[in-house]
Length: 320
Length: 315
Image 1: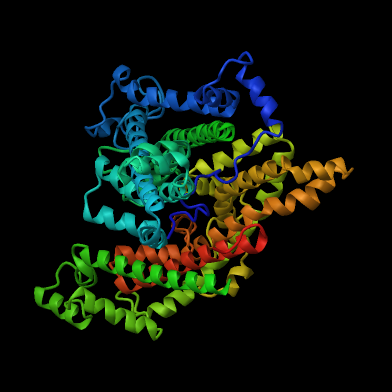
Image 2: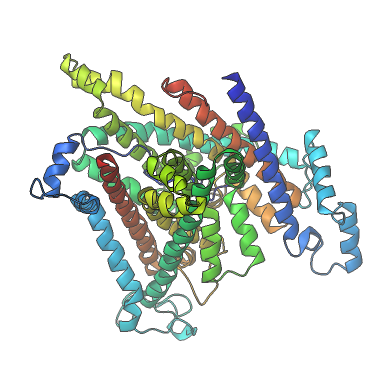
């Protein structure tokens, strides 16, 4: 059961064959803007391609601004986000409350900062867990191959075939939802796609000379996996991780809508938005559009960053 | 090829079995259990024990599982604890509705996304490309309950063009009789997935435009339009066909959030209600259908890849 029938459940939104700029070799030469003859590191080359992509740079700026807003904002703009104050309930935006207050008297602007902190933390941390677990699983499976690979991939197929909502429901029922729990829960349901990606790359990497050399020189399999395979799939993994962040933020929003999210007084943007949709008829628009726009902004921005990163990594790979 | 298919089918069956085992074991770890949910808070321990005994819930989990398998094999999916209907007939009611909603949404997505993606690739980094990319990402990023609500407010509340609710009938034919009510749910679901498809299409066309065969065709004097239609399009559709195969499971699974916004009684809502009432037989039935659809969809996606692209071999 997908929450939403995302036809690309879990897949990066814009995966697939990376676009290659039609006039690529000449163009990337100009783009790098470095004098010919000077050796250019892959990192600088990738950075140059990334910077050329205006949407990606814009996305990065938006993400940084939102992080500052959520993490530095509360230090400047003090609000009480714990005690209910019904005397202040449902105030329209105005002096003292730039974005008004919600139905229990919390200041909406301050709540946006606090909720965003939860959404962003969960998004990034869950993506980190999913990526780490998926990378390790995929690298081990692809590296050892044979029966180990079949076994590990069938497990993965099976978990992929279980409706994600069932897993989330189960985990949320068994453990009380807190921020840490949500991070682990979302991380544990999202590692399947990176695992598949990494396994695919590992299959081609493990026959490379430098991996063979490790074994000839008596290096253990673990050493080959951790020191040689994993660093080499980093590009693919980082790109996927960006999309994971966006997906996790959306997923936590859906869980909030289903009533399975963070419990009050803590909240996240999804919880704020789904709560706000209850007040659409009294026309408390300030409870609906700010969190809604915040979610859209961060998810779009993160996707643009991922898009730009993918182009950058592709160029690096092509140059290799 | 037949060997490959047989092996894949065998693997698929194994995967479905593993799924049912995982789900079955997880369900029995849940605190409370169905007896409490069905009989209510005032049930005595004696009544609870009786219920568990009647439904075989007091026996060891592995035995219960084997029992389930035996009944599934004979086509009996059990009887709902709550809805006073057999799971089989519930699935037969809900599945066609979910199929219609999701298949139409997928169709709408493809019809819009493929031309948009092609045009984006041809006009790369121009105004149209940027606008389409921006819009499709915004639709993707807006949570369905937000997007659906805005559409309802706009088209049902303000403009009064469309009904705010999906058709509320038991059968399938009334859905088509009241088709206007399906427009908002279909569009809501489609807007969400247009981004993915148009992005894939754009990438695939861009990728193919740089291929040698395109240069050859151009140097032989083939018009750009013909190169696009006769050469690039065919090749660019390969990854999209795979993507369609991969989205087949979603067609069966139901879209819980969209179904709940528009109150459309499909598989998503069935699952959700069963989960809230600990209706194990229904839960297991829905999960089984979804798992089978996922596995079959993956298989079809792989096979379609080989059929469409002669360079890929079964292995």
